[in-house]
Length: 317
Image (tube, rainbow, N blue to C red; front, top):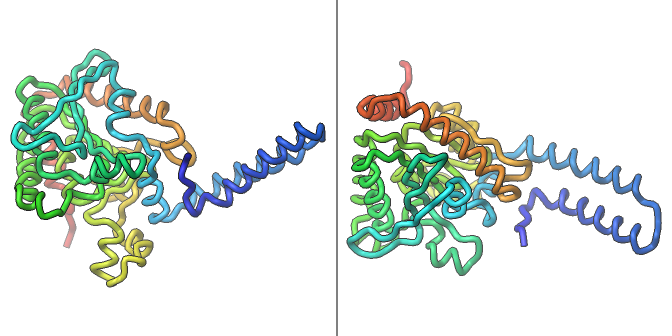
């Protein structure tokens, strides 16, 4: 069952009324076609009005939708062939980070992504997409393999942030993230990242030091969650709506700040309504970028990434 967001309820009510009229028309042999068409037209206009005027906090809700496409599913939709790889070779396999090797239009790629669940049981297993240090070490192991064999890297970002639990800190959470940032910055293979849902803090950046960063239309990318920001600044997590506006976390905001390189359009209502067409658009972007990077020397790829991050946050006095 698809979760209905609060601001979607007026749309859902209209579509429920349409279904009721269709059922009534069929069972009672009553001509209601004109009334159905009128309400359908009204529902379509209402949906367009709502989705063309979303607030940042409403976009956060869509980014967190439990039915949004996940990394594992996108790997298989985008790749002709995909082989999952597991474990960090030190402690365990962290289900919050998934990855492996695949082929896209005959090109080998290493794919890595955060993995959330679609229900309570899976979310508990995936730790709600919040990786432990062994998850980031698994990601680094795969990236080092990509570097060794000159294979491009594609990452999918979807996490509230790295897990802040005691065990994670004891096993070196901060060091694992910092090491990923350092190693990714020095790699000579192209790295392409997509924010597919929620990109939160260093937990997102740990697989996001890339040459190209794309955001899905209704995804968010931030240094802290709106709730966390509201708790710190306003001493009230309920002011997350206000914090969302100030954080500039939507795809339009992040593009405007020069951090994202492009926005992947989503179907009306969000990508949870159409995984297949979304994956086609993402695949098209990956194929285009990889084709361009074949013409660029490895050292120039590294320098491009370095320059991109050095230019972030520039200001004029």
